[in-house]
Image (cartoon, rainbow, N blue to C red; front, side, top):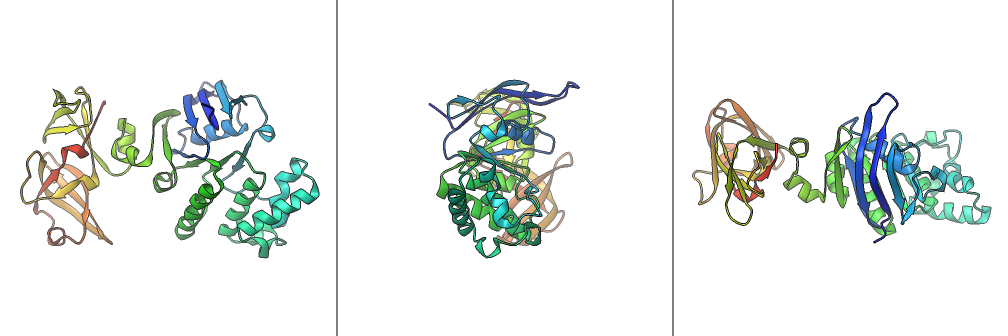
Length: 355
């Protein structure tokens, strides 16, 4: 199968010996939306620049549409890149900024003007076409950057935290527009972000990185519900991680571990030592149901935010865990600090992983 983008053991090591990216493998199908997610300095932007050709590769290969582009210059690759600061030319008008990439490619004037007019209309930028880019709002500048990236009709659009400079409300609006645009155009998107909500809400698959290493590549739901490593369990969502000792298997490959708070079962092979429980997997119960895992503690803190109740439950040994429940439930609204709480956990919601 020929992929739009394939990274084969791609790595980057700087002259001082610092490893920025280590043996990155990835296959991206046509029209797929893939997000690189991780903390600052994890290597996600470096990887994106290597894909674009702006950063030299120490080892490995970059393939696009079955062609090896490892040593192909950026302007010869079927990609377009949008930066966090938009990289617009303030002395140019909106129209000139959008046309810049076509001018670099030597596109004939008539064809250039036709493409620019079409993309300006698509992004509702026609009324501002002759204004200087630095005189427009953040949302308008973001649309200019997208228009400039897409007008050259790339096979792959690379986005390096393009929404980072926007306020929260505008960011949500542009997120929705971005996903709709990607579906409409069918272009492959590779998107770098440090915001979990963007990665989980926009992408078809998420690549989680830490210290230059790929920790997990999964669809958003699987990533959230079934973390594969301790880093992902700690980084994604609000998980509680219990340490324990393996107790063998309990049929069909379901492993068990013995924790200080009881036996826990999840999707494992029987030799895992960590049990991961999402904050929303806990429920407050008067008593347990058959096969349910029970935890007993006291309420340390309660915060009601809209329809969600954010609780901090203190287990024996002063272990505090995060719990998210419906704020509308009577037992949540009547709880007071210090009150005893029994939590129930469905074993199917527990993920067992290796330490």
